[in-house]
Length: 509
Image 1 (cartoon, rainbow, N blue to C red):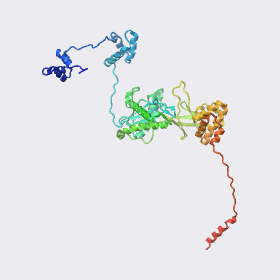
Image 2: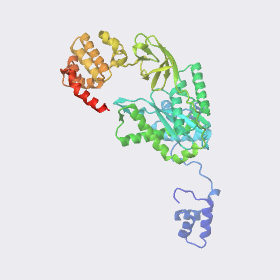
Image 3: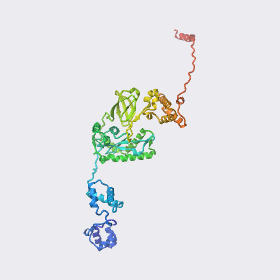
Image 4: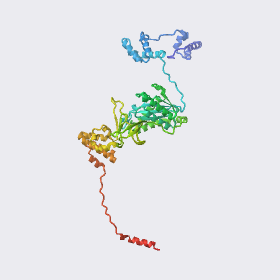
């Protein structure tokens, strides 16, 4: 047969058949060609008794005098060298002999040499997983999907939890880094959704959370995660740092989950979402479809899970801050405004991945969206999380402070207000522009007209005009109605006499 060597058994069978059959018949039964049969008849020795051909080379060896003398010592001293690096070095040394035309030959020879003489490679041992034994957690970067929220690019990660046996998955959109709060919150939600906890939980050592942390902070995170696992009765384990395949049951699922979300986005036809909540619901729906397909295996595994503890775990960081005279506080490179009545008080914070909850004397005061400084900047900048309602009372008394306010750009509740400010500053003194904008913000706060004022500002600016507070107020505020004159006449007491007469007749005996 083509591309196959003739063996001893075929030769013996062919020669035996030739005593009674033709060349064509004997060759067909032996599985060889007629031409091979003729060669066998000329030399009937079996292949094993013939002298083997040692050199099949049809051209001169381009590495003759170089392979054993220079290339092998190079590979032995630095096992991590890539073939292309070796090729470039040999071409530099011997430009008249070595060029890119021998690249494939060098790659094949190095691959064979490493298989025969190279270092041992890591072995991946396949594991048999019992139901309810192991759950896995990891984070994966989702920025490559190009998702936008109201037109703004969403840089985010996904916390990903999975059960090895059944394939149950849970995912949560994470806006910050791979922190303890993101891991703890995501794990708690996953186990609550699942209705139980596995016996063991494996992670990648929270390496991203440990990065850039001092030893004491890293140890604190380790203790907190150990306490979280103990709360659920799980044994915490982790793979060796930097060895991703030891967490392979979750690593391989990252790609599958991203593919499912990407395909769902293609079917949707849009990667833009109106709100972050809408995108989170979309991701949850994709994962729910996956879990529905694995429903039978998940139900089997649920029966082997540990019952959840009655009390929820602590999944947040805690901090304490004092409200300054600026009616706000700074926390992790972000400035947050709060109602001015809290100036001078110390607030206790519960820091989640996407929000900060503030408490005063154990009582909840307010919840603020979590702010983060830009990740890739030459100098760490401060992010401002501002609500104009917190400061409008004082700003109304000092409208001139608006022009130089450090967080002025974050003060505007809607883009229309920013447009109006830019148009006013470009056409009139800053003092007058500040008074107009403060008056508009005060009107929006007092009358609940924030959206209506924004629509009016857009309409005025689109027509090329400038906003005038009195005109906007007259347009949006209801017209004062005149009070009608009401004439009241007091009747005479005598008009009630007939009524009294009738009453006397009814009660007479």
